[in-house]
Amino acid sequence: MDNTKKALLSVFCIVLLWSGIAPHDYFTWFLEVLPALLALLALAVTWNRFRFSNFIYVVVCIHAVILMIGGHYTYAEVPVGYWIKDLFDFERNHFDRLGHFAQGFTPALIMREVAIKREIIRGRGWRFFFIASAVLGLSAFYEFFEWWTALATGEAAAAFLGTQGDVWDTQWDMFMCTLGALTALALFRGLHDRYLNARPEIAGSNVTRGRAV
Image 1: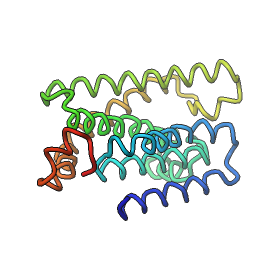
Image 2 (image 1 turned 90 degrees about the vertical axis):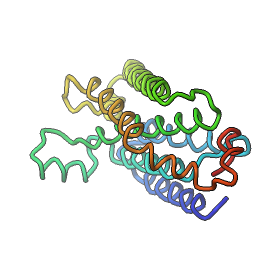
Image 3 (image 1 turned 120 degrees about the horizontal axis):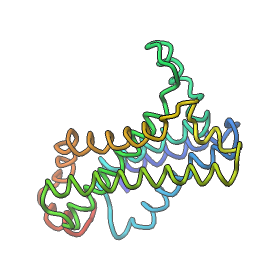
């Protein structure tokens, strides 16, 4: 493990520890932080078989930090969201929009790297289409998960849903997720490719076999 990955793991653990100290409530904290913990577990389990570029690990860490901040305060109560709300005279705390943007941005780049390294979808246009569609499907499933959680727990899930009285909250969540995926695929493709090709002497074997770059 290189220094970049060690630093990212340290940031993950420090922010996780902070987020778990006296959060808004532990039920919401667990639900919000769970995806970050599952991502860490998945990366650890697949470490010897598939290693991502450092670019992906940085993106995943940033997304995890967003999740853990949201879990600590609940998305509707994050202080920086209130600051932006007051600055721009918004009607609500928009930190959850950032969370859903990341929900599309991060998986899109992860899928892109897997598709390239495993040569699953070679055509750029088709790769763009299938990844964007898959991310939208994941976003819809997450909305189902929120719905099922609310049905199962009732008022206990109010902070987890974080609708803030917005009747279009579900649609906004899915839109921001899709926007995140499209932004990642359209605007960050070049940066991602530079990380994938950072070591051209081993790029051929790594890109096809999924080893670290």
